[in-house]
Length: 160
Image (cartoon, rainbow, N blue to C red; front, side, top):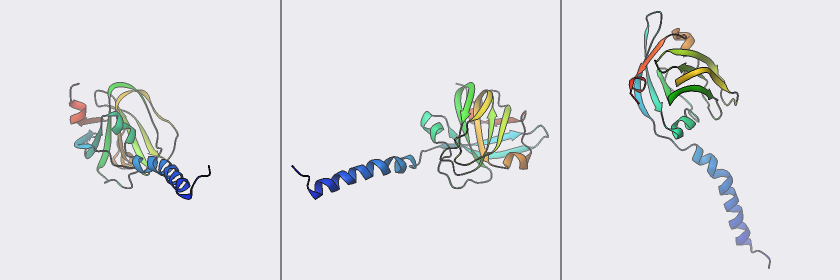
């Protein structure tokens, strides 16, 4: 029995929905709490930021994807719960970022400056860390943030 035009049209609409829906839903907002974060540099500077907290799997998977702008003093802290080697990437991330790899004691162990938007290259912490902080690209160089500097926030001082 031949299919009617309406049957074909319905099938086409379902196929279109299945192709478009994942992209639309992927860009739906994920809610993040915020907190103050302080970086104390070895040079004695005290740098203040307001960061969004990514401490659930859903939040860590989304991160700063699809964001088109971020305030100069803003960022995101990823809390992995336990210390481990962490691998990040920039897929679907529009903003160039600096990534700070921070151990459980709040010491910055490594920095990836100017991570390239949309890149699928793996950015590896190399060593065990508990946190990753993402800031706008260029902020670490501009403010003199270096490995060995200390970071403090409610997330890093919370007992788990």
